[in-house]
Image (cartoon, rainbow, N blue to C red):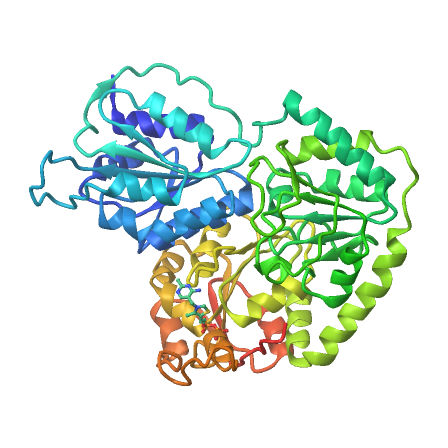
Length: 529
Ligand SMILES: Cc1ncc(C[n+]2csc(CCOP(=O)(O)OP(=O)(O)O)c2C)c(N)n1
């Protein structure tokens, strides 16, 4: 016999979980004890549950494995909400393990939160509860939802008094491998795939729009093979920017707001959207024209509030792309001829309107190793990077589609748990202040990490947005902020400190990095990305 805490560790091991990020509590100490005794799954102690949740998000992005986060009843669980909501918004597999306490009627119990399950269910894909001796069933149900054809964030709530219940130490039943769900084509979707293939194959100028779902289902190769078969230019969302690199003659990148790309789409007569929410961010608030017919491969058949004519096809991205590829008969259109002048035009316009930003991005690109993990916070620099920082085939990027400030630092810590290469967080001084508690996690684990902080003493993005006549925001109130001395801050957390006063020195500091380093960039980027 083993107790539920030990059983849960065994279940995690069997599911291939390598690491749990979290903060313990009196209600979850038994689980920490079981982790310590078995020592099969690493535990990364975050300093705040929001940090822990965003570490799980970064880890899930970098490894495509399930990110696991541990919190405890009430305040601990609620601290993690934005990270869990973010994971679910971005369809990332995150398993949130927490506890609950039941006092029947209100009795002022420790962390008593009678609403906890409803709140958790509201931000993610529901809650599985462990009440008594059965932990295998709820774990399996939660795992299957996390790793389904649309990955989700799911909470597993263990009753805080159930940990010591003993259960049989049998071999756990195998759980589905991550990425194995949804590889078959539901019969109802076959006819839609036929229709989409015919529309694209017959189009004069087909275009493909790819989102993060392509990367998460490991379908980048299949996407580009279909693009080549059609001769279709490929535009991406911010999350889809890694599907190819700029040396591919059909690849445009996350340029949905560029006038030349909008013209290209306006002139197209067949669009395939794959694994994308068609979010405001990547379509310049849905101004990106998508003239019909538009088919969207997405395992959630949700329809779209702004692109009402989109026809959803509920098939896993990789499977759908393979199937579409087999249905293409016509020779490819000369999409490369359309892409070439757009690429030249976009780069020219970028370098002309933003020479300082372009220099920093070039330095960053030249200094990053090909397998770097790089996360971006809600700093203006992030928006420039999303659009214009080249992506390497083996790199991972992490950017909160949910636009949550304070996410990039823990994201990079989570990415560093993939165990190889350099991790870089790019954030503003505001974003650093929102997450600097996790510098302690860095000090403890000593990952190869660069924390690149753009220092302007302001919430720069808010200041610039507020200055727009339509907004009339504050000039100083809630905008200009006190900053710590970053050299002392780095020293406190046993990190190296560098100042990159220009682009070249940013590149140099990144190339020379040998341990946790805080790189201060005394610069505010523009807002005209
Ligand atoms: C959790 C959260 N709180 C508030 C905001 C609103 N917000 C968006 S950008 C921003 C300011 C960011 O400032 P900073 O990190 O210094 O970067 P900068 O804009 O100066 O480059 C704020 C407060 C947010 N996106 N997320």
